[in-house]
Image: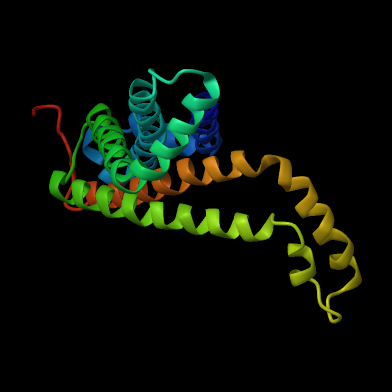
Length: 215
């Protein structure tokens, strides 16, 4: 099912982002509050936004589709209903859901870090990033459709192609084909969430300030 797969992808996203050097992040909370700058917490805010967007998009969308398709007579009919719903709702609902989750994640991380950010710029950046990320995801879908279709390796290989690539390209394509659905779902989770979080975090830090102990 798509829902647990999307949840798994979102968790992987969080672990991957969390794999960056923690010591550089952990220094900021230990500094005196007066010496801290808003950009010291940029990555925490980006991380919160990326995970929030990655979870909110698929979680809420699949919940809505499950509710709409609950009267289906059999599992196959329910899956057809959900697939059709994804095609119809994703271009409209998905950017809004990612936007909401990303914004909430950025603002929460900022509040926990004691940073007062630019709310308007956060909203604009997150929404624009969600739309841009959705375009990127659909581009990845089209690329995967073309790359993994039968006979695509023949279009990639020409007489001038180096011999090692002639052997490697068919192997790589054949290896990826069983994971086509997963790769497409990963693109739908990663691209909108990361793009929305990046631009939303930039907006949040536009004119941001760290609260002083007296605030």
